[in-house]
Image (tube, rainbow, N blue to C red):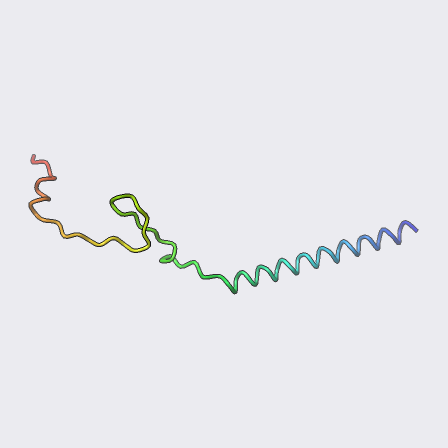
Amino acid sequence: MARSQNSFMKKQLEQKKLKKRKEKEERKQERQENSSGGSLEAMMVYVDENGNFSSTPPEKKKEDPADAKKQRPSA
């Protein structure tokens, strides 16, 4: 009699595992369908001169040639 109960329990455990695996696959599929995508542009973060984060790239500034000469040490 112990043998029949043992095989019954094995079948129940196997059914639980299959059910759990199927639910996990369904959740995975649902996440993939509802994902917003992971494009590189969406993940980019820029830092401005003050250290603040921004999703837009900073504007390029035109440098004056006079300022460039002041920054370079003369040899």
